[in-house]
Structure formats: structure tokens, C-alpha cells
Image (cartoon, rainbow, N blue to C red; front, side):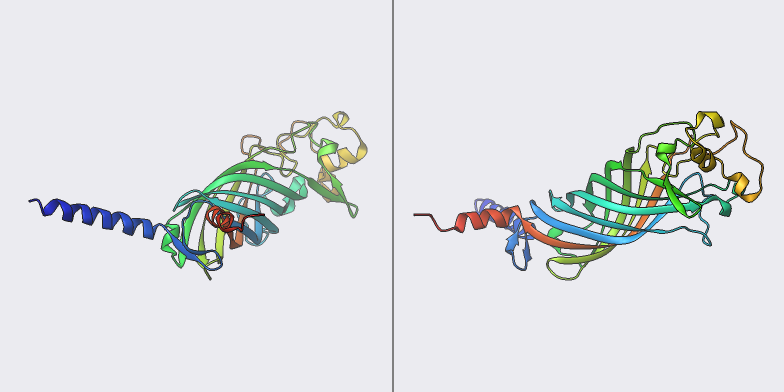
Length: 282
């Protein structure tokens, strides 16, 4: 019996050491036995943006109106599976109502917007496992700057200052996003992946259309009146005040499909080790 206890302690100690070793990884240029916490990764990406709002009727493969999206950001790893994540992104969305069932309104827009968020990412496989393919989920909260424009007689006009519905709205609404993706590990430091992200705005004015047509005399100029009601351009009678222009009960959103590159820049552990090995100053 007295021999069993030392064997049990040896077994438990061996398992603990094994777990510690498994919770570390080797990264070229940073060394071996790198703990996951404190790892800093750069993120860059590009892809397409898809608009969902009042000027579309859902998915129309003939007129998707896709625009580009670009992203630059970073991640700070908290544990084997979880990281803080932030990105600054730029995207374009657009739509033309002539391709929808409300074609008689004849509204259209294009918006090139920046957005920013802070969030978290959860990986399926532990970092130290160094899996070749690692799926993940992520979510975040932030804001986007709305800049819808419409083209008239060959010139693009910013719509928010014209108050085309007789309403001044916030151009920096709350943004909530969620998505999924998978990263393919190319080397110790480089990864390449595919990501799908749904972005939900607390605003119905991504496209400058939300509720009803206003009284024309509420609008500040002839230009505002022309861009508020574009039915006469296609030979349709002008819309009456109070006619439906959008649906305020459903907020606007947009979707990104992106290719993402990741590069492990450094780690808090590596910085601490370098500080310890610096030569003393005399």
C-alpha cells in the first residue's frame, strides 16, 4: 500500500507536466514552448459585401449588387480557444429598386462606409494543437458611418443632408455582428481562411429609405424633392405624402464573404523573455 501512493503521485505529476507541454507551441522566429495567452496576430482581408434592406426583395442572383469589402485588424489571444478581436473595415453596398417589386418607386443608392468593431473569437481546436484547419465563431459590437448617395443627371449626391424623408437620422448607428470561418495554417506564423459575417445595424437608413414619403414642402430644396420621389423619372405619377417608401420595422443589414490572412506578429511571452535577456547598461 505504501508503494501505491508514490506511483499515484508520479502518475498525476506526469499528467500535469504533459498538459503543460501540450498547452505550449513552437512558432518559428519566436521560439518553442510558447504559451497561447498574450499572442498578438495581425488580420487582413478582402471580399464582397451584400446589402439587405428596403430597396431589395431578398436574394436576386441576377442583380446581387455586390460591392467590395476590405479589413485590417488584430487579435489578442486570451486562452487556448478564445481571443479578443478588432477590425477597421471599409465596404460598398448598393441597390436599384427598378429590379424589385416596388420598381415604380425607382429609388436607388450607393454607400461606401467605414465600420469598426471590438469582439471575441472562439476556435474549435486549441491553439497548441496547431491544427492544420481550425474552424471558429466570432461576434462583436461597434459602429458604422453611413454615407448613402444617389446619382442624378450624372452627379452623385449625398442623401443624409437632403433629409429625403423629412427626417434627420444618426449616421453612426450601433453595429452588432456575428460570423463563422475557418483558418488554414500555412506555416507557424501565416494562416489563410474564409469567413462569413452578418452585420446588423440599429438603423433603417443604410439606404436612406425607411418609412413614408414626406410632404414636398417639408424638404429643403428642389434637389431634395427630386431625390425623395423618383417615380416621375420613369413616367409614373408622383408619390403622395404618406405612401410607403420603406419598412421601419425591419432594420438594414449587410453580409461579408471574405478571404482572411493572419500573421502571428509577436507574443507577450516573447517580449518578456527578450527583456530578461537584454544586456545590463553600464
